[in-house]
Length: 139
Image (cartoon, rainbow, N blue to C red; front, side):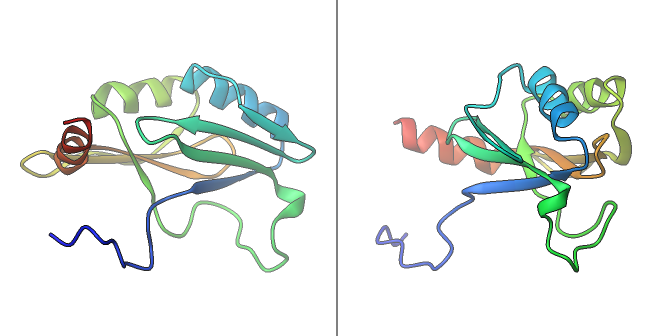
């Protein structure tokens, strides 16, 4: 494997979700994640998550590009979780709507997704590759 990392895309820096009610979104995600945003400014709040401290940004919808689409759409970004089914069920009890039920994608890979109360698709995944990479970085 080439360790010089000459690839153009180096990794996820920030995933941005829009919300018409930013205060409600901050409260909902704070409850779900168990942490408060580490950074806030007018119209924006940001959480740092997980083993690599990836960022989840919540942005007031009034700052969305004028031609952006409303409602669930676009790419789904999956966040690794240890238990997809339990996390999926927790999200549903918190008011998220089912988008895709937990689905086994092969040995060591399970995906699922919900639409949060603000219209964003939140993907969750058990990913054996993620754990392998994490383990190799800790070694």
